[in-house]
Image 1 (cartoon, one colour):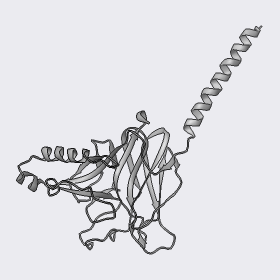
Image 2 (tube, rainbow, N blue to C red; image 1 turned 60 degrees about the horizontal axis):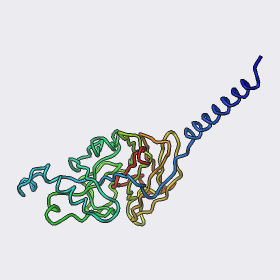
Image 3 (cartoon, rainbow, N blue to C red; image 1 turned 60 degrees about the vertical axis):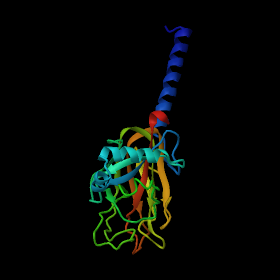
Image 4 (cartoon, rainbow, N blue to C red; image 1 turned 135 degrees about the vertical axis):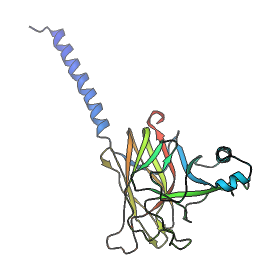
Length: 252
């Protein structure tokens, strides 16, 4: 026959187990949310193309030029602090890979795209400006037939973008250009994390916006989904982006 003390201990164990289960349940059911800025400990990548010929002509190796560029970026006193993500060029290369896999855009859905956009270019020093070209990424194929200055090309198959992280992260964000003012190619964006979607973030053509997702439970993969207005003849669900950022879960 159980004593009063044994019964009390069993009750205590049941209560402890219930608390633990409730905690685990709240973590698995946590809803990812939209964010408009990154927290402390964020790493933010901006893509650059190296002009090898001009670099060698300047008497530098590619490695030396890249190191000099990062030093220049580190002198930036404004937010965000940028880390260079070097890409081969505007060649529809995929997946884009920043930080040796720290951020990797997977599958055939995100490409380098070197054409004028609404995203501001970092003011490089006079020495480095001829050696590098700051570029962006896009969820559509670039085309040599596009007119100079056209923000969104004729490729109307803007793709859903999948992103993978080397380590578990709590936040991910990017600076998004939705297209031309008055004729946007996409009108909203949302993120799919841990099988749950965030609320919809409205986008406006001609006005780049920083947006992202946060999930305190952490994640290693996120899917970026865009949409356009029903019946629109100009929106192609295509967009350009830069300033790819993440905060590791361990630093959150």
